[in-house]
Length: 212
Image 1 (tube, rainbow, N blue to C red):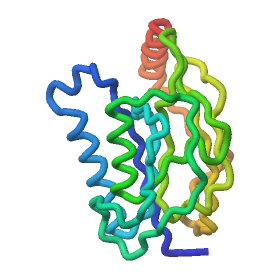
Image 2: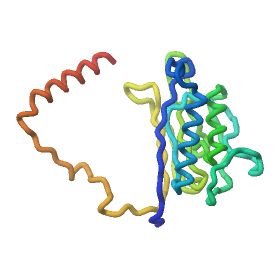
Image 3: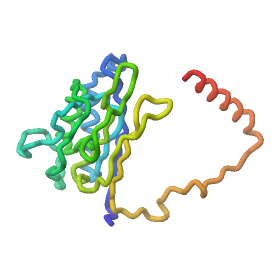
Image 4: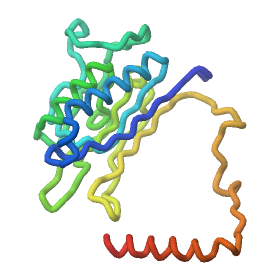
């Protein structure tokens, strides 16, 4: 096991291109900020994983460089790995601007899209307007031989998106004193004085559920 392994996980959500959030900041700037954050983590020795709803339709755009001499701005990392991974497939042939930015981000950071490489490609989002593949897991190149399993789960309740499941073998043993406690190890002590606030929180949650 590699005791020096450091993992940085970026959990992302990019609103659709017509969202008012982009009136103050363009989506180009947000993609650039994500790219800079990934590169900074890589330069600090972190292996990066990025996942989430990017609202990006990538079709079959190449997300890795076919020619490693192709000019792109690469992070200054001595451990850069040339990709030799399966070709990517995609059930969604549509391409949008977010998809172009996402595959360019992959090339610039030496990462690759996991979707469509280790299992049958599937849609990740199902709405009344149709189906699309806009949710992704993206990994550093040095994880290419450590991915053991990937699949897109069934549609979840209260969401029009499917969960993406990926098993990665890090071969890394977590020290006992740094492990998260199992559910059986966690106990909560009830305080009678907290009862009124607890009831109010339940009422608030009930209203939220009714609004769904």
